Structures are given as C-alpha cells and as structure tokens.
Length: 207
Image (cartoon, rainbow, N blue to C red; front, top):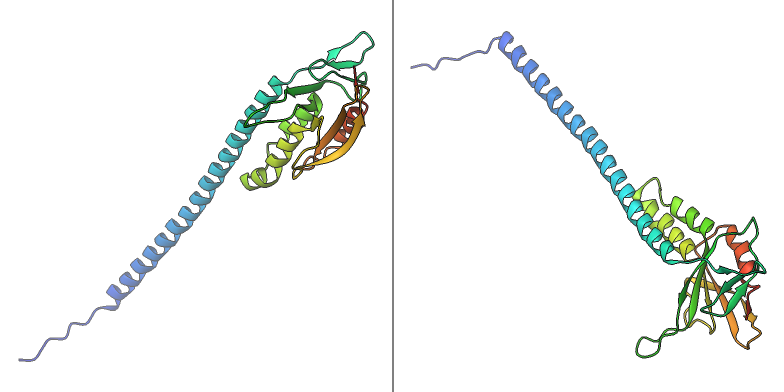
C-alpha cells in the first residue's frame, strides 16, 4: 500500500515563520528589558551603599570630634592645654576653633606614650563633607582614607614615634621645661589649612 505524502501549504509555512519572528522579538525585548532593569537596580543599590557607608563614616568621625575639647583661653588670649602643660599662641581669624584629645601615658603590657591629637573644627568639617563621593570604589579607595587622615590631623608627643608609616615629622620643639615636643602630621591629608596649622603647633611652649 503506498504511503500518502502530506504537503504543508505555503500559508502554514508563512504563519510558522511569523510566529518564530514574533517569538524571537519577544525574547530579545525581554533580554534587553532585563539588562536595563539590572543596570538601573544595580546603580541604585551601589548608590545607596555609597550613601549609607558615607553616613556611617560621618557618624563615626562626628563621635570622635565630640570627644575633642577646646584649649582654655587665657587672659593673654593664648590657648592652654593643662593636661600636657602646653600653651599655644592666640588664635587668628584664619586659624580658629582648635580642638584636641589628650592621651595620658600608659604603663604595663599595653604601654603608650603621652600624646595629643590636634586639629581644628574647620579641618574636621571639611573632612566630613568630603565623604560623599560619586561611587563606592572612590569612597573606599580615595575619599575615606583621606577624610580619616584629615580628621586625625596632627599627633604631638614628648618622645619620637616608633613607626611613622602614615605620618611624617613636621618638626621638634625644645620646651622651656626641658621636654622635647615632636609634631607629627598625617601624610594622607593634603588640605592647605594643615600647613598653617603646622606652623601654629610648632610655636608651642611649656608653662
């Protein structure tokens, strides 16, 4: 018995091709839409992460700033730091709102030398405002380390530091009471204001 041959009509072939074309276009549209959606969502997520991380860093720096205090203003307008028996020149309009954090000498297993962390309110404010970068990579690699360094400002000690990886020695001051003051500056902070503050700190005296 002979087999019957079934021939598809041109109309059916054209319909199949049209359906395949439509299906292909739908798949391409879905892929493109997914790519665009992923890009938009990912951009939003990274921007949110950047802002959140900047806010956390800002809070941490503000908490540290709140622990720092102003030197006492004497009748001669000079600024006195009683804990370290140091006196600084009177502040000027170009350099005001000096703040410090005193660290007493600690003995024992975790011995640390007597030191002072010195900064100004204006330098601190600038460091905090710089935290809002364009992306999280820039924030982590460039902005945040610089802001943290500027928030630390200067470290004053009465003996030389053992490690100077992140700071450089601005100079030493031989005090009237026989002590030597070592003034260290953060190398990762490039604000012009630090140059003026550096000169100011190198005029410290004892009392």
